[in-house]
Amino acid sequence: MQPKAAAQHFVCSTLKILLMLVAFTSGSMAAEQRIAASFAPGFLTAQGAVAYGAGAEAEWYREGGVSFRADLYALAATSKSLPLQQSYQGLFGIVYNFGDRTAATPFVGFQPGFGFASVRNGIADGYYIYPVMSPVFGVHLPIGERWLLTGQFRYVFGEMNYAETGAVYLSEFRAGASLGFTF
View 1 (tube, rainbow, N blue to C red):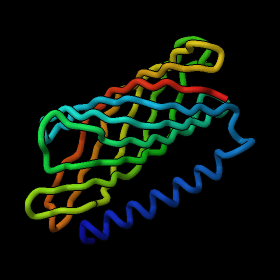
View 2 (cartoon, one colour):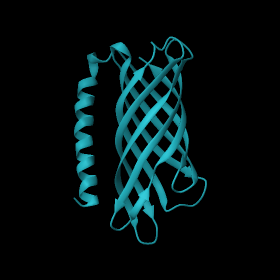
View 3 (cartoon, rainbow, N blue to C red):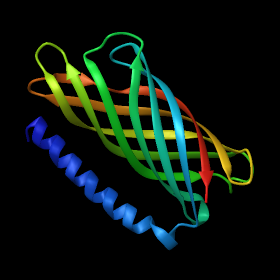
View 4 (cartoon, helix red, strand yellow):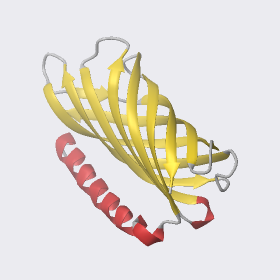
């Protein structure tokens, strides 16, 4: 299978899974929900550059510590000029929370998803879709009855590989902090 066809197949399969999971977790099936805004600096491993991003999170808590979590991320700036001009990522996965969020609650999870990036390297100039996956771990800290401050660390595996771009490795170590509200 060609890299472009493989990426399209991955994106279509991921979207189907995401739609199924969103339908499964919506409404009355979620015991509690959290939405948050985040700031997430990271280090692009292949480019050797620091990246600064902003994001949004949504989490649907279930009974027994399991939650479903969706993350959106947008690259805001990098520490040096790169062929990567812009990157957006969407991740959806399962998280296990080691507690009930009334005290410091550690969590660990895994989120597959996809990215959408703009690359300009003299040969390629355009937007490209690429698969990503990310283990995530961190801690939720309650700062009021409904507010949570979340600190997290993740490694995002990402590679864009098209005939016109060649292999562009978009993996990064990313730390983040978010302020969220539960309802």
